[in-house]
Image (cartoon, rainbow, N blue to C red; front, side):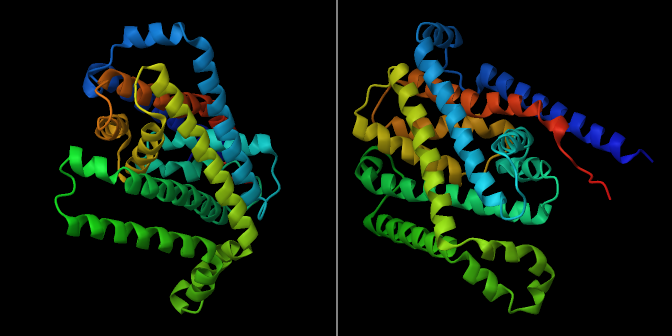
Length: 327
């Protein structure tokens, strides 16, 4: 039976191997056929001649994940005092683990194993609450974009075939947004309600942590989520402009919102993720532009900068994770 130290090392090696294996396969899949309309020599030439713009987008990536680190640290302080550097290390580690898990669920595990003393189940629940805030942000902005771009969607696609379906869609989106807002800002009330039933008693020591977040705390978490959303939306807009996707700012802003909305609600597996992103981007931006290469190049570079590079960075932090604690 291997020692805990040996087992921990093997797990870390396994995570790094799986991460690089899936990243390599994703990149190979992209280069072969997933985004076949991309000319990679043209992309490289464009990046080389617009290095200041790419540096700006890369800088925004760092700011994006710093904001997420501040958000996670703010939330995790309920159970353990950590530095912003530890939080940033946890965020990057989570990205690495999420690179080979469906819908990025591995992100939770990658983060909580950075903690020294805090309860890990409570940490997962806190992380889920933070993710819920980010999801709520995407749904709110995406729903607004759906409403604004609805006329373009029905005239240029066959997604909605009659007035009844469109009305039902708006009603459903309204109910979803209202429900998410009510649940998010009344999460402690929901927890207290669940604790009235014996079936949930076994969760009492863990789920009560959610009750420690006040309305003010939740509002701050939501604001930080909105700030992150604005940052990576700005990155997308900059890249669209760089690759010559010539559409009006009004249409571009709401199209970006709609793309992130569709990407978020679409279940994906790691290897198919970039293909889904490309298909969604073409569906939405194709309403206003015929520049297929520019659209795909933008989503590809955004994916590389915001997810692939952070996953590689996070692989260096995997070896600092603590899977087993000293008794």
